[in-house]
Length: 142
Image 1 (tube, rainbow, N blue to C red):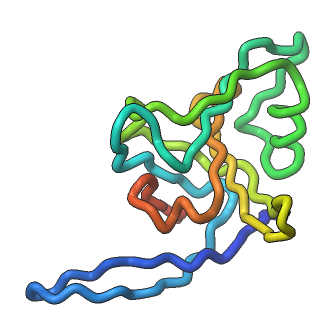
Image 2 (image 1 turned 60 degrees about the vertical axis):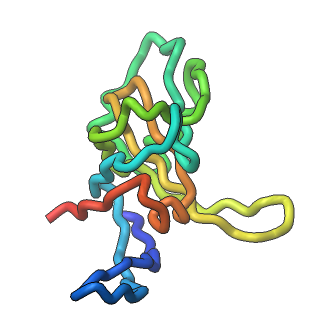
């Protein structure tokens, strides 16, 4: 079953010098593509990079798994480093492999999206709010 989520995007429309705020509802789904776009400074402000540093001997083909199976295989095996996504990823892309909801310490729910950047090596971890920034562009799978 493909897990999907609806996210409300704010899009700025400029027409004949007039600027207006338009809200558009899109359905973000597993296997959709996100492109890493604008980046100020050295790192992205809203995207973390999880990079594997130790692999289990029975590695999994991450192209063949998604959802909970992907999350468990990637995050529960081996070791990884975590840092903000460096700006040199600007212009590259990731494929959404997992979408989940987490609750913070104050009881507020947040949508988390995990996108594979390099097969089996690194993944981008971001809150759904990232779509309200200029850091990612969304390209649904057709």
